[in-house]
Length: 156
Image (cartoon, rainbow, N blue to C red; front, side):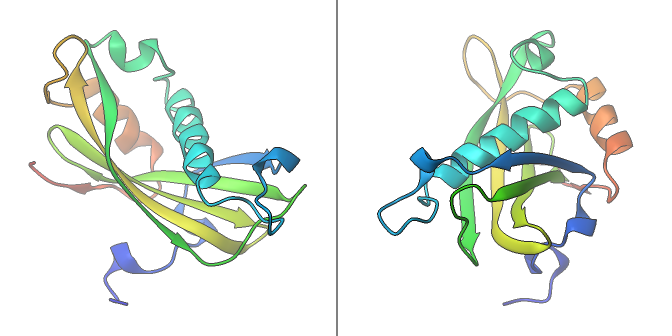
């Protein structure tokens, strides 16, 4: 594993945003651990709550600027399993802001233990044609004011 900051395992201190979620019985697989695909749902909840926290709650947050973000890629690293009734802390931050895209770093913790972390890239698109469009300046400003660690800036 590289020692580049974007590749180091996440810690709770890396994130300004956290949302708690309790594991439900229906989310378990036959091994009685959270089925891996449910972590994508958990991270989608974290994204929605992050957007609410910065004042861009769906469906109108970005739509009032004529755009929305769509998932382009997701990569998850599994380190440990969650089980029924565990209280999880989902954390999220925007690690990179491009002209038309952004990358979320997200993680799932039980207490202080990192269970799963994710890198999820979203592209900002127009509402009608779904073609890439620049991120709205008010959105970028809110992100920059909210984050503890400023996102990397890229011209994509």
